[in-house]
Length: 489
Image 1 (tube, rainbow, N blue to C red):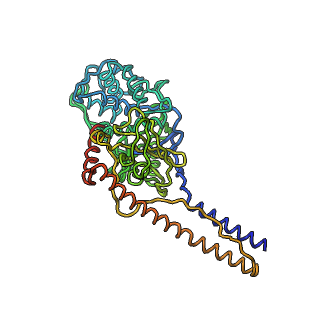
Image 2 (cartoon, rainbow, N blue to C red):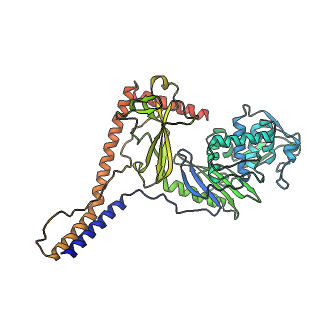
Image 3 (cartoon, one colour):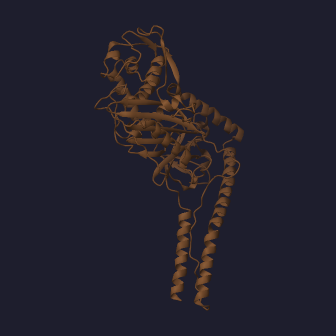
């Protein structure tokens, strides 16, 4: 009998392991890589690092530096039609062998926009130098502005720039992670995104090109995103910048869009010209294996119930708070919103959105996957708060999960039948449980999620009523502020 009991207990343990394993969080997919020395994919909207390979080591950036140069120029120039005159230093004080594709010369003039086009699309070092002198008075002063911008963006790996062009310099280094942060800031700027996605542009007459010249973007994934016959065909690639020096190898930054998701990919130091294939591999991995989930559509903590949020000397009731409407987290495709862990931060940075009183930070297996600002809806803040959140209703149910605990089913009973029958009954019972457990648990999860969404919708309606809004009025205000925020980028 003792042997039979042990066998039954083993079956129960197997069942428990099955239940725990079946409903554990999915692992973060990592089954890909790049032949470049470093590579990263970052979600533009959540900031999540989806793919990472040696992303914190400092390397030579080469001409992807010009993306940062373009951003600093755009942010510090009011008139894109203003004329830039090329100085002798801008034209000739460059690394030997770095080239001058359009034979630009001292005294040539172009508009700021034309300089940006030739710098980003054709990687003109001379245009980078001329823009730096135009904006800051000197290249060294402009480099100071670049490094200040790096700090403002929040780079963490000690990345530093020494010139606006990306030509070799012993002190010029960037990590893949920092470059992804820089690229994210660049592509959030509408003009910088427009320039780096332009396929063809032109320059006016110059000393050596009296009829001007036209040119195409060097980034092959962007150039060929509508050409299915090209080996570089990747329709999601929308913008980016190439880089190369003898010391840096090939470097590449790419912005991609698909089904409402926006990603940025960076590869550093490809020595075998794998930068394009590497980029296509990791972008496809990120698009196909991950998803973005709306925080306002799924989160109910802090904006419902009766527990107030304390921030310094202020106390906010749940009815006075809402989430940033655009906030998302990034998850593996088979994970649920409720798999994410969260923490509330009330010590906010100086550059927080107006009206924000706290921030909810999300993680997944110790990986940061996104955040949402808690926005005050108090009457004084309604007209100035930065993009109040909304929780739109949806048909159907969202993915969710509940906590389940497997347990043994042996109670205290007496063995009054033969050991053979007990063993047979135990095996049959365990097999039956294994066959039906998944169905039962999934049914409970679905029912619980449907109930959660019904409660969410009802609380949203009540919260809007408490602050004096109809759903139509609130959605109109959110849409207006979304457009204002895009215009201010």
